[in-house]
Every structure is written in C-alpha cells, then in structure tokens.
Image (tube, protein in one colour):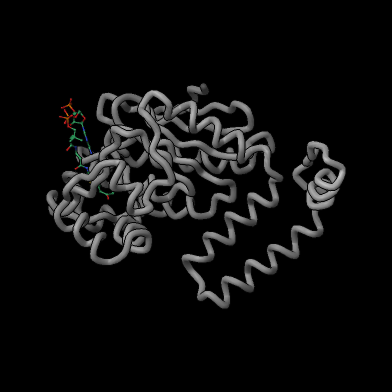
Amino acid sequence: MNNQWMYIQTGIEKNAGTILLNRPEVLNALNTKMVSEIVQAMENFDQDQSVKVIVLQGAGRAFAAGADIDEMLDKNSIELELLNQFSDWDRIARIKKPIIGAVHGFVLGGGFELALCCDILLASQNTEFGFPEAGLGIMPGAGGTQRLTKLIGHTRAMKWLLTGERFWAADALRYGIVSSIVPDELLVEETEKMAEAIAKKPLLSVRLIKESVHKANELSLTEGMQQERKNFYILFSSEDQKEGMRAYKEERKADFKGR
Ligand code: CAA
C-alpha cells in the first residue's frame, strides 16, 4: 500500500488498483481533501496500464459514515458555491475502468453516494445503508437523490431519503443496490475474486461494456441501442476480438493484449 496520501491508501495487486478509505477514527467521514484524493487515485489508476479494475473499500468499522460534519458545520452557501466541492465527484463519472465498491459497516450519506458511484457493489452482511441528511437539516448533494431514485424507484427512494432510516445489506440486495452480499469475513476474498475475473477480460470489451451500461441511464432506448451497436462494431477492430474467437475455436486459453 502506498502512503503518499493523507486520508487514503492505494496499492496494485493482480491488476486491481485498490483505494482504501483510511480515516477509521471518524468512520471514514469524507472531507474535501479525502474526496479529492479518492478521485485523483481513481484517475491515476485509469491511466495506469497495469490496472484493469479499481476497488474501493473502507478501513475500520465503516465504509464511510458520510461527509465530514465537522467540516460542513459552519459553512455558508457562498463558501460552498466557491468551494465547488462536487466538481471532484463529477470526475468519478468519467473514469473508464470498472469500479468495484466493497462495502461494510456504515454506508451513510456521502458514503452511500460514493458507493452509488461504483459500477458493482459487494456488501458484507453487516452493512447498514442510509441517508441521514434530512435529520441534519440538509439533503444529499453528491447524487444521492438522483442515483438512488433511478436505481430503486420513486417511492422507495422517498422512504429512505425522507425518514433517514437505516437499512441492512439484505434489503439493499433485494432492491438491487448491491450485486451480492457476502459473509463479513469473506468480503476481501470475494472482492479479489471478482476483480481478478474482470481483470482477465479484454480491456476494450470491459471499457465499452461499462460505457454502454452508463449510457442506459442517460439515453433513450433507441439512442442507447445505437450506442451499443457502435461499440459492438468497434470491438471487431480489436486484436483481442480475433484472439478471443480464435482461442475459442482452437480450444485454448486466449492471450489478450488489451488492444
Ligand atoms: N462526520 C464527522 N465525524 C463523524 C461522522 C461524520 N459524518 N460520522 C462519524 N463521525 C465520528 C464521530 O463524531 C466519532 O468521533 P469522536 O470519537 O471524536 O466522537 C467517531 O466518528 C465514531 O463515531 P460514533 O462514536 O458516533 O460511533 P457510533 O458507532 O456510536 O455511531 C454512526 C456510528 C451511527 C454512524 C454515527 O457516528 C453517526 O450517526 N454519524 C453521522 C452519520 C451522518 O449523519 N452522515 C451524513 C453526513 S452528511 C452528508 O453525508 C452530506 C452529503 O450528502 C454530502
């Protein structure tokens, strides 16, 4: 793990670039500098040829218990406008490599919003999700009202956002917020397995699948299908498409080059 950062740690293993949120003494409360480090680390991994997939996880007993309340307490609207802190969050949507969120413990407020920025979410059984913002006299500001509503629908999103109630990983699985739940002690191992499986796939397939799925949230069905078809055609210009199909015919393991 690399300690060039103040609030996170990063490392690369088996083609997975890991970002560990590392402020366990405050349950990984996200302050501005920490978010900026997370986004910078993601961008570094996105540029790094040795990294195929990015993994985000939290140290201690939480993934992240929200934005840092101490940092926000005395802020006013003008300071927030000038700080423009959410522009860092916007950069996460431009990361081309898949991001796996491996969450446990508390996933609250801004922590939940960060989890919702991930492409795949694995949760350990003990994970508690929630949006406590309304109880603090604020509301989610990093995409929570939008991403949660698109994911689970109007009435369920309203319930969780307005009541601030916390809910368990089992509910998150039922609502499609997480892709799977694993026993607490297996979270790291299962995340590594998933990262490894993705890292073995040809880079361009992974990249264009991610791009196409993201477009599904933004485009009409017709536009999305057109986008998908273009990406499908593009892959036939890749060496990995020829290699993947030849290897299948020759009943051998494909040797993908990422081009
Ligand atoms: N900001 C700053 N500090 C936080 C924090 C946060 N979001 N969450 C926890 N901490 C700190 C606590 O103040 C405490 O610090 P001290 O030891 O110095 O007192 C430490 O982390 C441990 O927390 P607790 O002692 O409270 O632990 P607990 O197990 O009793 O409770 C908890 C855990 C229920 C998560 C509780 O800490 C809590 O309610 N935290 C706040 C959650 C919250 O409201 N998050 C939303 C923030 S607003 C937001 O995220 C806005 C946005 O959309 C961008």
